Length: 132
Image (tube, rainbow, N blue to C red):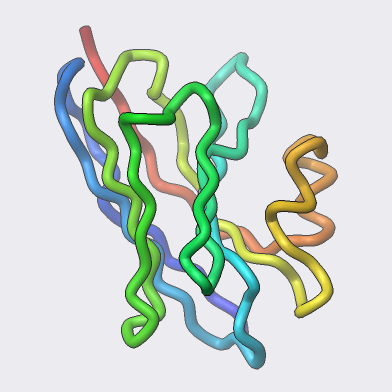
């Protein structure tokens, strides 16, 4: 059974930092890339970042320069270091990976989160709250 377990969320003040982790298990293939979505109440779901198994990275404009995604292949874990956090970063953050070897997160940028769920596995989410 595929599992993606996120951790590292919490509450911080603006300007603070958090590091999210996502550990994968149960995959029978090596996903091309792994990444993070976020969903805030009343806001559109957003693809925040992803990293390919070759280390190629993507960041949305809203987090570029503040967030850094990385991976530890041996631990099957992806990390997202979030610095200079802003109140607008408050959201539930979900780790995601493509369903099967035919799909890549990089192919899904124009899809809504609901549409992308057809092609991705998601974790249960971890809450990040940034206060003024």
